[in-house]
Image (cartoon, rainbow, N blue to C red; front, top):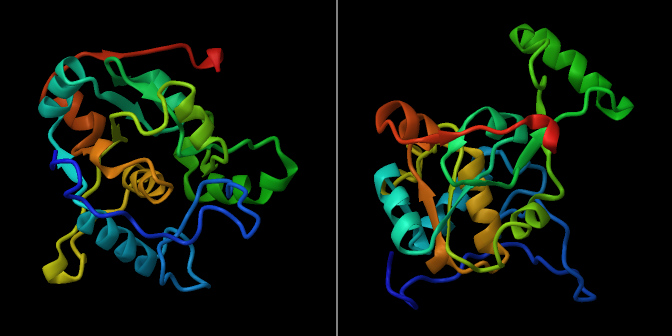
Length: 219
């Protein structure tokens, strides 16, 4: 990682309200985000990439991530829904869900559940039909690590931070990169934030590193 002080802060809309109280999260959006666009919109995603690249956030290979956890005190953080984490996760990783499994029994989610079943019939009978925002993301993370400690985030496929020369058009948006932005924008400290390229797919299927499993009923 870059030397301490070499990275600039990530800018975001205020994470505290006018009274100084912490704004619940997720999710913050970058300064300049269109008011009518969601945090997954193309302009918001371009601005997120611009901030992360400008702050010097690094993407590292799974082999480097494994070595840094074993030798340099980093913790791997799996940001996928707990059902996916329970099925398979990088060995030694903790779980803090950026998105959580949607509760199809919640009346407020019935419409989304019905639509999801129509669009994704293959998900019927699986762990979940769709995902929704996890308001407890920050709390879940701090159950495992101290605020500002050295962490490496990953999800299924990793995603890609685009290049400034093409206006970040070659970037690939994923929950782990969005979670990385959320933490950086809230002041985690970009010197201690890393992103694992390729996700668990690369960790397991390409590198052949060990992975863990756990009972989803434990959550």
